[in-house]
Image (cartoon, rainbow, N blue to C red; front, side, top):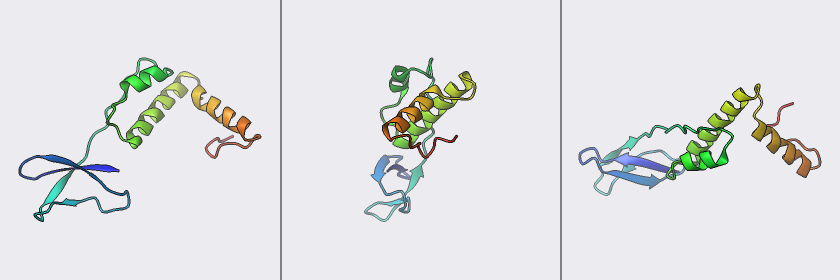
Length: 111
């Protein structure tokens, strides 16, 4: 994962690759500890939650995988609200998954 850190006096921001299980702190070569920068998610305001094109166009190209997953979940929730609690895209995915695997259901496909 990429984590951002800000120099306490200059304000310079530096991205550092660190493992998820590592301690998230950055100390430069002079022994100065930089401040961690927490970014806010930019919500996707898609005109149509059923449109893959809208999703791709509204996704920030510098988004992390987690941010993209969160946005996809938000759109899934919106599709479910519009369709009586069932996301048709997710339902089709689960149906196709089972068909390709001889009827075995996806682990997240709850009856």
